Image (tube, rainbow, N blue to C red; front, side, top):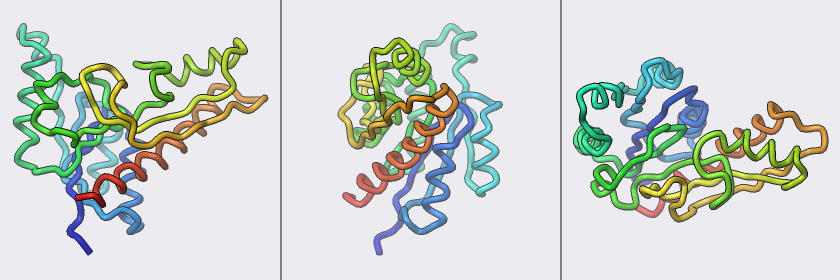
Length: 200
């Protein structure tokens, strides 16, 4: 078997998608090793998930850059410099709430992927699940979905790697729909990482 792929996972919150990767690796269904988990928010619960799994973490906030009149591009370039020594095969944005410019992406061509809870070019940006549910309630749509795509500077517009359709059910609440969406996200994230790392 090939050596495990080296992953860096970027999070900003709960880290349930990170946990899906940790679980797949532990189960032997994903030949990979998470070499670093990065968060731009100190309180992100995903940092505790990483620590529990024995994975090194890095807290790298944007605020000091803003307070020091430095740019988002400076932040992107500095974070890239911190990540380069880890020699990651893939950088996974799993609930990472920061849009990267080419000052970051240029260092990792076609090695940065993002998970987004909507179908291509629909509900780009934040609160996609809530916006989809509102559209369902208004009778505008009967399904939504989620994608894993290559990261580009344009929000959620990169080439799609894997996608899943998630239908609405007649008695759905926002909570029940969100739960099914997160389950689909976990599945396609592991699937996309497996596909891309097997191509090495």
